[in-house]
Amino acid sequence: MNQEIKERIFAAADELHAASPNGEFPNVEAVRQLSRAGMNNVVEAMKEWRAKQRKQVQAVREPLPAELHGVLQTAGQSLWETAQQLANESLEAARAAFEAEKTDLTELSAQQSAAFEAQTGELEAAQARIVELEAQAAAAIEQQHKQAGELAELRTQHEDSQRRATLAEQKAQETEHRAAELRAELDRAHQDADRLRQERDEAKARRDQADVRAEEAEGERDDALRQLAAGNAELAGLRAKMTAEAEQHAEQRKRAAEEVHRSAERMTKAESERDKARDAAATAREDAAKLRGELEAVKTQNAALLAALKPAAQSKRPPKA
View 1: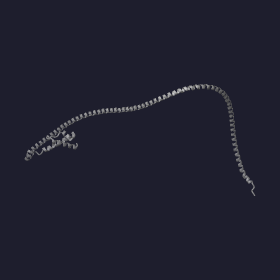
View 2: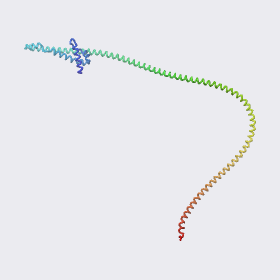
View 3: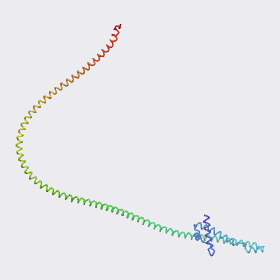
View 4: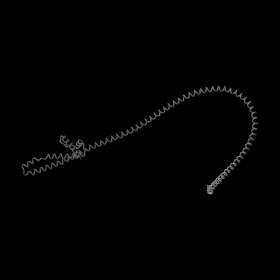
């Protein structure tokens, strides 16, 4: 046991013992409550405290007896009897101390049992309170979960409401935009109607003008038919004339074709003669080139001969006088 705890228990026991009007030893529960110590520590410390208190009482109660003073004064035979009496008294005192200690232990045990029973009651009450608090906590948690579910549902409903409000606002904007488009289309339709009415009036005016022009065209058509009849007669005469001229032109084309054929034959013959002349010219050029080569060879030989003859001629000349 910690010394500080023991001293605190002793101090609490001394305080309670001093406050007792009858000088009774304090019980374990009172010391435990005052010292704020554990039950086992209080019981163990109170045994030691009671033993100390009992020793102090025995030290006070066992001074040299008055009978012993008489025996010492008288001396003699009564010394042994007095010693036996003192021994018996000491034995009785020891027996009384043992009985007192036994009583103390019994009292401490009873107090400890009572304290344990009190603690057991407090523990049972605390456990019952814990069970009650746990039930309340479980109910609170369940209520919290329920509220959380309701809150989540409310949040979902709120979000749905916001989405529906947003969609409604979008639809309202779309409806307003569509209404504006419809108003614009209606304005354009009115404009188109006005334009169509104007075009109808203009078409009616053009139709009236066309009727007038149709009447004029009918007159012009009659004139054209008369002119066409005259033109057809003139065309028949021209067609007969053109037929005669076509026959003449066909004869001329025939003669021209024959002339072209003869010209083509002459051209073919001339081209053949030209090719032959080209071949002959090529042959002549080859012969001329060959002759030029031979001529160059002869010139080279002649030059070599002249070069060889010049030293001989110079050696045969007579010397000058």
